[in-house]
Amino acid sequence: MSFFGNAAGQRALLEHQKGNYGKAEQMYEAALQKGADKAGILIGYAVLLTRVGKYEKSVELLRNAEKARDVSKEQKSQIVLHYAVAQYKLGNIAKAVELCRELFRTRKTGLLYDTLGYLLIEAGDYEEALAFNREAVEYDDEDAVALDNLAQTYLRLGNDPDSARIWFEKARAVKPDQIDTLYFLAQYDQKNGDLDAAREKLEHAAEGRFSPLNYATKERVLEALQALGAGRRDSGKVVNKSE
Image 1 (cartoon, rainbow, N blue to C red):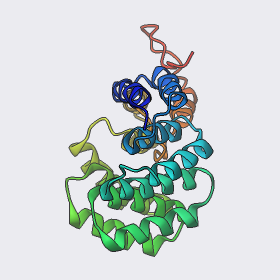
Image 2: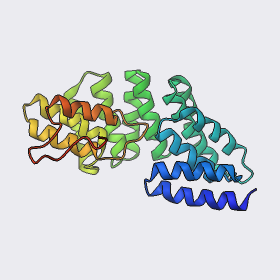
Image 3: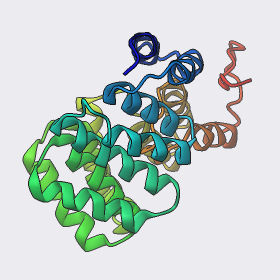
């Protein structure tokens, strides 16, 4: 175990928590070169790599974290969950779902409900996704992700936009800045001809912190804005922050 490597890794974790992903990635990598081997550091770096789209390296780090000398039971559960997300992003949806199901059999948490609920939507089985996401809302009816998952189930799999909208509105009431919720509600605004309301929601979504489990990726949100002719507001404010 390297004292200096793990100390450097802790500093990388701090930058990660601040949202400074580019700097944090460089610092994590330097920490690994110095011998960082604590489970928390390896998990943190793996999570960041998944967020920035480096899934194969994330999987490798999670496997190393599972073997770390200081890994705790709680961290082992985190590793399985993050490993499932990385597998989903690599296109292995069936494996991702099964990993979460196995974990869910031994413990039920809000995060597991949220993750497995979304993965079941992606897997495409309407009845299973609907039953599970209804259960998730019963588990916590103030969980904005669970509410949004149920809404997406109705909309994307059930072709039931009226039921979906009810749950999207509930999700927004709990968390007004949730990216997927804003993205889908903007579609309702656009359909109703309220382009200003749609634009406002999409601009708000575009400024959010995107995760690997967002249906509305940054690219999707910006494409939707562009389709509205909303590359810029009248004030001249640039919407596309990536330019």
